[in-house]
Length: 267
Image (cartoon, rainbow, N blue to C red; front, side, top):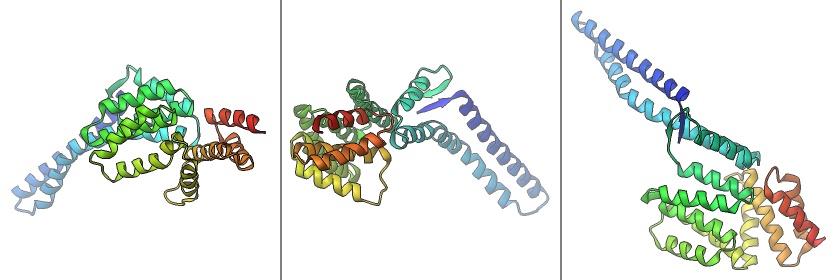
């Protein structure tokens, strides 16, 4: 979570406004009571404003810090396919002296890891993932480990990934972790284990789904994976069509360059 001093004072001013309104309502209630008028509404409204002050501070920290950076990450990494832009923004914030809050967030670190991965910077990606696992609460630890093993499988570090994957699948999982584990089993793990038919079926099914709508990065990854699958299965005509999609829609990712190399290799 990142929060600049400007955003911090914005939150403080808004909280003070609610405090002032609450004080005015309480004072009005006292005056109405002295005049033997009904003051219940004024007291209730004043109490509500007082209670809302700390809630406003907590909510404001999220809205101005973590939420803003997540939206920025989704924009640059997942939709505009400009991963370096998000990395640059993140590092500028991380090294800024203007911050009043600088606390790592799993959601933001996940976006950062994806950004490094889409640039094929594997060392930086795994370093960020390690940080994710280390800061994760007990409730989110399994999720962070599954994200880690997903990258490890895609980097063909099978033994290390398999150990983490087995541990994660045998632990208590919520619905999100179960869904993620199943997706990894049919995609990253299946690809590493050379189970190309499983990868093909899962990728085609995911590409055809209408809800939830896929972002541009997900589409790109799925097309590149299908290109790899069909290349392995020696169905070069299909492989070429998927690689061409990656070249035309690869943005500023390393996937675009990898697709160009693959196309030169099989044509």
